[in-house]
Length: 580
Ligand code: ADP
Ligand code: MG
Image 1 (cartoon, rainbow, N blue to C red):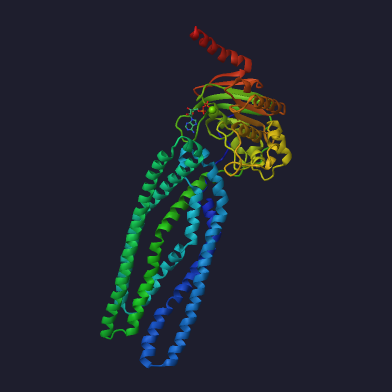
Image 2 (image 1 turned 30 degrees about the vertical axis):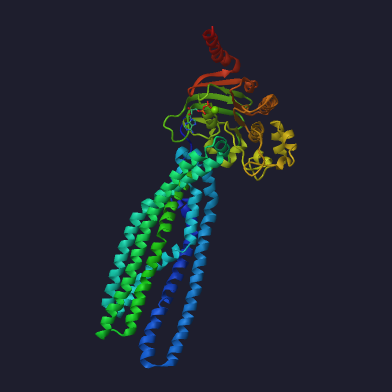
């Protein structure tokens, strides 16, 4: 038996990234938008062409019927242009929504698991906000502007046909503007990325304050926390200002250059007209044409910050989804029912250099009860988290009937794992939803069975709305002991094969402890393995094995009496000796 993982984690190539997959079907739509943009840009020639006809044909000939005919034609073309512009806007706004619809579930799922997968690195990741940024950009005026930019050569080409000199002047102006755009891109990238990071930190501060509202209020911490917030907010606003100053400067410069260029073309045109090389109509038309050609560029620059932000958001999304989607399809393995073996496991939170729990090995069979004891900070909770896959085993393996946890699809794990964390949080929702872990297929029988097992049923039905009582931020507050018993019921829901309870009695009264003891006993009789982390001896009354941890290492493991004799008695003797 080797410790190597049977997972063949193929590095997926970027074409399989969910972001690429989500964008693939809308690529056709983008081609459609490009086609519509082509027609729109042809129709935009209506203005200059009309002008040309009025000057050179109508005014020269003085023919009113000609004026009426070409005037009517221009109105029809403008109307057609308006319709197409509207259609394009609607298509683009729907594309943003389609991308969002395809990714949002996955992104939410990933964002829930980021802290476990990435440890403290996850603090800077905000995939849900990133997706919002992408959707907002796609649905805004940005993409339309970008689709208009490629038609610049068409306009300039026509100006060239009017007169090469006019074409050269227009081209020169366009080149200057392109250089400015390149500089804008380079200079705004940094601040924009930094602003996104700072926005994340800012949100974390808001969440922290809300989560600890009672502590903040009770100890008057508002001032201190507001100071921290102000500093972060100042940094954020400063970076934003820098980004917007730079883009603003370039935007204004480009606009000014466009105005100058328009007049220059008019001036050069007038000179050519005096020399009788072109007609006055051509002079006016080229001026309008150049200005038209460059206006999408100006628009694009105005949208540039959104474009850069959304491109960066997309890159982060790709990164995050890559981590998540590197997992191959999982087999539907049968649920474990016999054995849990921990083989030389070193574990700790992701990203920490030293695994805190080191070299733990033990075997448990169905029906076993394991008590984990040890001083505070000895690694009991870390070990408990590793057992349920909430922190990775950095070395060694934990096997459930011989297979590693990673071999089950993540949605299946709840069918054989029950976990009551030390620092427990219930979800916003009804008590029934909390006990059934928000499962859509929850049955009331199973919910009530778990509640009875945790001896919390009577307490729940005594509430005015019983199992439908909403708890959490929007609902009723439960006492710490009540929360702990609801969380115990949640851990026991569905009779999981492995139940890990981290200090489940820390808030319980004598009656609660009695319920806990009998729950552990019942679960063991049903063939579950129950692991109880305990400070007080009452919780380990019904276990048959003990693991003692000290500084993250095994200081003893075996049948309860033996280990207690070996570990606890010498301590007591030492204490007695010290006291004498
Ligand atoms: P116990 O439950 O026995 O009191 P823990 O397992 O909670 O101990 O913690 C063991 C050690 O691991 C402690 O020194 C703690 O500082 C460290 N530790 C626990 N969780 C983290 C974490 N997320 N990041 C860094 N260190 C951690
Ligand atoms: Mg602990």
